Image (cartoon, rainbow over all chains, first blue to last red):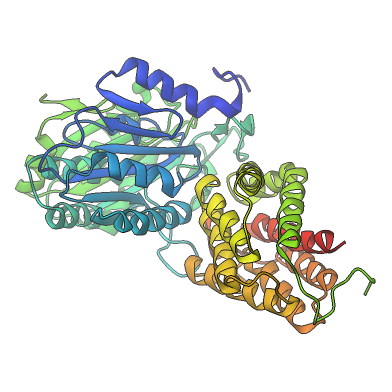
Amino acid sequence: MKMLINVPETVVADALRGLAASHPELIVDVENRVIVRRDAPVEGKVALVSGGGSGHEPLHGGFVGPGMLDAACPGEVFTSPVPDQMVRAAAAVDSGQGVLFVVKSYTGDVLNFDMAAELAEDEGIQVAKVLVNDDVAVDDGLSTAGRRGTGATVFVEKLAGAAAEEGAPLERVESIARRVNELSRSFGVALSACSTPAKGGPTFDLPAGELELGVGIHGEPGRERRAMMTSREIADYAVETVVADLRPDNPVLLLVGGMGATPQLELYGFAAEVHRALGERRVAVARTLVGNYVTSLDMAGASISLCQVDEDLLRLWDAPVRTAGLRWGA
Amino acid sequence: MSSSEPAVDDVLDTPFFLRWLTAAAASVSREAARLTDLDAAIGDADHGTNMQRGFAAVTEALEKEPPGSPGAALILAGRQLISKVGGASGPLYGTLLRRAGKALGDAERITPQQLADALRAGADAVAQLGGAAAGDKTMLDALFPAVEALGAGAGSFAAAGEAAEKGALATVPMTARKGRASYLGERSAGHQDPGATSSALIIAALAEAAR
């Protein structure tokens, strides 16, 4: 397995140095692993802080900037960051209006953000938390750690971030974030396994002629394995699964997400099939985003995420955003 | 029971706790590759790397700010694990040691029975934090039998180590219901739980510290 790295131990730090060099509008603390928008803390504004394991770029560091996150904490590859990073980030961006932690539903992320919230409150920072758990491939029952947080994180960070930028108070920013999560569902498909730098090879074994339906963003297994399907068949399967769970009666935001190693040519072809499949189920698409937003290193494959929106949420989606990974209207 | 084994009315001092944590760090470091391999089978292949990084920070901190009591040693170690490990293991192991340390208070010398009680308080806190119970294929499947053995016997560290090791082996046929392995469902059976394995290493280090 060939990778464009120096040694596995410095992969995250090297990437952060590159982010710092390429985006002077960000303050990147490489040693303490905190990425902050340069104009933070923004007077009178609620701050958004997120984070998680590295390997899902541009999530979350690529979403730091006006209109989205105020700070992000990257952990080791596929490993949750530690509370120290989150507290440091919260202290750097809090303007006195409070901080919203956007937490993806994974045991490690939840535990570390819980501890960080306690520690930050000890320091006099008001903290609210929202848990993103949109992955319909997982039973939300007692037999697993619960639904995973995947593509809807982009919706939550963008929409709640826009509300915060408009000056909404913490309580409202939190309730919008919660509502966006409740209105969102995702489903992912892997055509190949991802490889972590530390392991130096694939993290699971997926035979050449097969695909994994309902895969997670760390190579967690999905619902089933099948012989390779066409883009059309995959779109029908994914759309049916998500729509059956979400039952949208409003227009939706659609994210057609790459897993990291699938080219735009394939993603747009897949997007065409997803649009067709949604149309056949009478689901109107208000906006579409196609590309790599919540990735899984070099995994080939795609995911779809839907978020039901009303006029207010659609306005927040269209609001200006200026980050390394998402940018419009500004 | 060998002659180096403590009796119920024996006392354990701060140097004993420093030897224990140092031995645990060495053992985790020696077995890091094995822990990562076990994690690769049912998790995301980083347990050994993460625990090694955390315990390296523990030994460094113990040298830099020598704790004045057994409780302070455990609290310091727990804080380092929370700050350095990440993932679920950081908060869970950090909580285990911090809660055990808090249970010991300021006492300069403690009995093996007090240590057993403190570790039970730590394990209970881990169960609460992770929402897990015995049989979920987690670190608790090694920790609960270990504190049981430590409390029941005459504070025998060898018995605690054996119970933890047996508990870790007993996770092999289990189906994971917590953590990332839970997404494998029945496919998680047939693999030893990495967290139970690292817990067994830490408990086994008690006997080393007593020598």
